[in-house]
Image 1 (cartoon, rainbow, N blue to C red):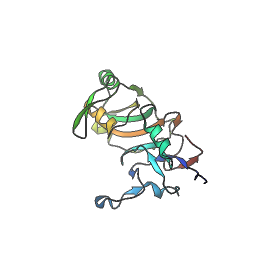
Image 2: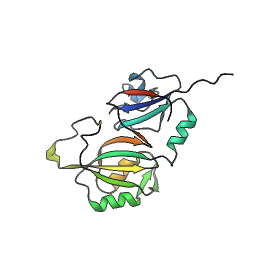
Image 3: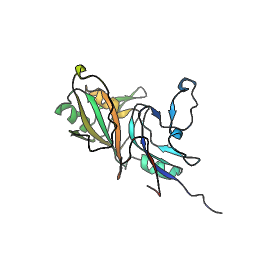
Image 4: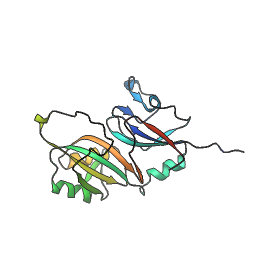
Length: 191
C-alpha cells in the first residue's frame, strides 16, 4: 500500500487573517481564511496558531507528527513585539524570568525566556503599517523567544509588565526564519 506524500508550507500570515481554513462560527462570517492565499493540499493544518491580529511566520503541514514535534516545548518561537511605551530594563528582566498570567481563567507562570531590544526592524519582511498616531506616545520593539505557546501568551506577558502589545509578528520557528513577503506561501520538502 502506497503512503500518500505529505505537504509542507511556509507562509507569511497577513494581519486580519484567521489561522484556519474553515469558518464554522456564525459570528465570524466575513473573516479572511488561509485558503484564500494559496491552493493548499487537502488536509493541510496550521502548526500552532497566530491570532487574527498577529502576523508573520506560520508553518502548515498535512503531517500530524510534524505538527506535534514543532509545537513541542523543544522548538523555539521568536516574536517581534511592538509595545506601548518605551519598555524598561526592569520589565524586560521580569519577562525573562517568567511572570504569572491568566490562561483560561487560571494563573500560569511562564517559563524563563529570552527577551532583547530590537532597534531596527527595517531589515525584516515586516509590513509597514500604521498602528496609531505619535501623539499617543512612543512605542518600542522587543524580541521574545519562547519554547511554549499558551493562549495569547505574549500579549498577556507584555500587558502584565505594563507594556501592552500593539503588534505581534512571529519571525522564527526553530531554524526557519521569516523570509517571505506578506501573504506569500512557499511549499517545501519538510521541516
